[in-house]
Image (cartoon, rainbow, N blue to C red; front, side, top):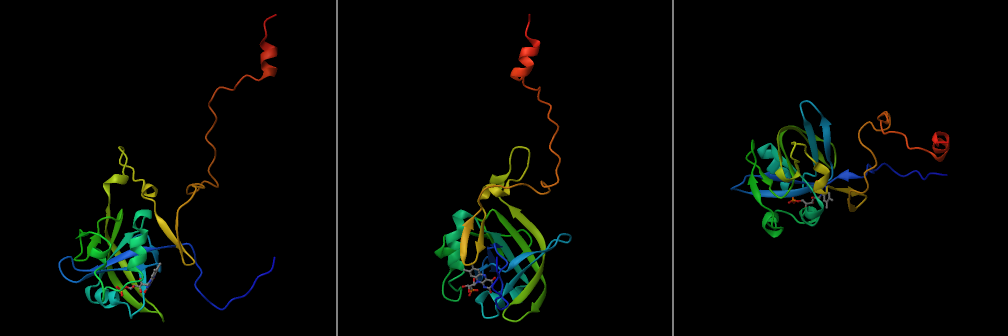
Length: 207
Ligand SMILES: Cc1cc2nc3c(=O)[nH]c(=O)nc-3n(C[C@H](O)[C@H](O)[C@H](O)COP(=O)(O)O)c2cc1C
């Protein structure tokens, strides 16, 4: 096997792809699609989005210091793409995509009601990096749709059909391959009674 060496570039794929809502519920509001996002700290819960300063959403978020990360599902992927190719300077993305702007619990920025998980964020720092500026933010609340909870209160996020973005294309998740720590997990002891083999049978045969 040989390798080609490319100039530096961003190829950390698959990446999450999210719809970021911003502005205010009853004033100017917008949605921008972002793939440059992720978790940076567990406690306090911290995340980021990296935006080009020329985006219409950039100044809205810079001025308000707030945004909501709305997770994307198979049902929402078309809207997600639309919000990533049209500017809020020209169109109302909520009405064009039939998305509902609903109140968040701790911010003035709206959530997208149709998204199963809305992560409410307050900007802590804006770090200019070059093409993009990173909005480092603290998560202040998370709104989760009821429909993915079972009777015991367990949340089944993967039933929402999350999607990801990989090298220019959107994908639904495929086959489940394991769960956290499965590579070292011991198999549960077999407590099923052993089946009789034909060998055993002959031994126990009555004479
Ligand atoms: C899949 C996808 C991912 C994107 N990720 C980012 C991103 O992380 N940062 C960014 O600044 N723009 C990103 N964009 C581009 C913006 O979403 C796009 O320019 C959008 O129209 C800006 O909206 P606005 O002008 O209403 O703010 C992405 C677009 C797509 C389709």
